[in-house]
Amino acid sequence: MQRKINPLLLVFSLLGAGVAFLIGELLLSRWLGDMPSILLVGIYFAIVALVVGVGCLLAEMISPTLNGYSWKQRYLSLSWKLLPLTVVLLFGVGAVTEFVYELNFGGVKPVKDVVMVIDDSGSMMQSDPNNSRYSAAQSLVMQMDEDNQAAVLTFSDDTQVVQPLISLSKPSNRDKVSAAIGNLQTTEGGTNISGALNEALNVINGDGQTARGAMVIMLSDGASQFDTTRELQSYVDRGIAVNTIGLGMQDPAGSALLQDIANATGGQYYDVTDAGRLGSVFQQIYDRLGDRTLLTDRSDATKDSPYYAVVRILALLLIGAALGLGLGIVFDNRHLAKSFGIGGAVSGLFAGLILEFGLSSHSFLNGLIRLIALLVLAAILSLFTGIVPVGEGRLYRGSRRNTEVPATAKDSFPVPRRNRGSKGF
Image 1 (cartoon, rainbow, N blue to C red):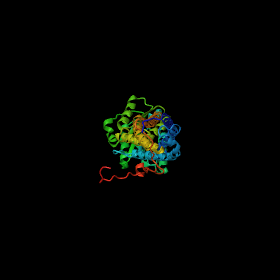
Image 2: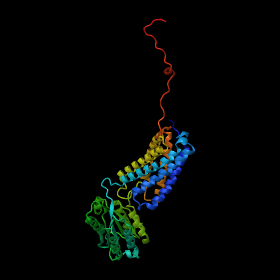
Image 3: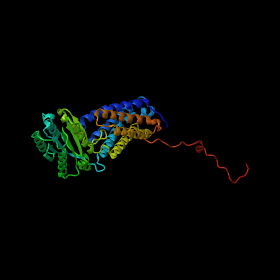
Image 4: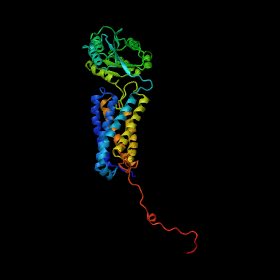
């Protein structure tokens, strides 16, 4: 049993983490939101296991520092056959931990109802002369999931419920909402934000499905008298976020009000100067409602939740431990399984902390954070054999060795017993 490090294994495991990152980013960019998150995360970590495992195998095959030359001579072919077990193990652990991460703790309700509140006051003729806000709302309705419900309100001096909450599970309902939005026109009048938000809450409460979470998207270009502390209390109590969009804001008071509304309810404020960008902004708000994943930031009501922070960190700890244990299985070495398993748990803990406190709403930075987490995961795991000693010790035995001890000379030639009754010679 020795504490030793294979520098080549460290290099190859880091290279494997880099390759896994590139493949994983392609996977996330293509399938995030289109593939079930449980399946997606499972595949992601299975890829990590495959590429890092191949790197470690190649390193030990070239320089068998940790597992010894006897492994290379007698068990290398077996190790390649065992590699798929590690891939399956990481897929399973990744999928299970993602399943747990998506559960709703602490009374959190998944957001399924989206209420769009659109400013139709006279000033919109200058802010949005081409009525791009209607096209943006139509596009969002057509992109929403089947388990969503949508509602549309417009407001100026008064608020009009264009479409109450309706399920989008049927294509005919989507067409109905889209047609109602397509018939809207800018009206004369002022900007009554207070009345609009009160009516939006009535629409949400009127649905009667309190188990479903709701979100409001409010677009405006003006300001009005509004007491955020008093008038938003019901939104805060229900956990309903109001995401606000300021379009071509000329009055700083209007921008400040929309920011205050978003901040008070846990939403986000978007300042838009070009009405042509409204489509992407609407989609961005909706995308931030997506399923929680271990690999992306939380943008819903659980963003600052300590429950999900702990669950993510523990999930990565388990994934790291499973990766280390899987590598021990590949090398068919119980001592390596112990060393890599403990090192994987430690590296997974650090990777979880990096993801939890590093991920944000910036997609480029998120990719960089994921890369750092994978590199840390591979590096600490590879170096842990310098802390926990390793030696040769097979996990699998093809046959038991003959453990019989050969007869000794004493057994072969017994000494005559002395006559206890005689004295002298």
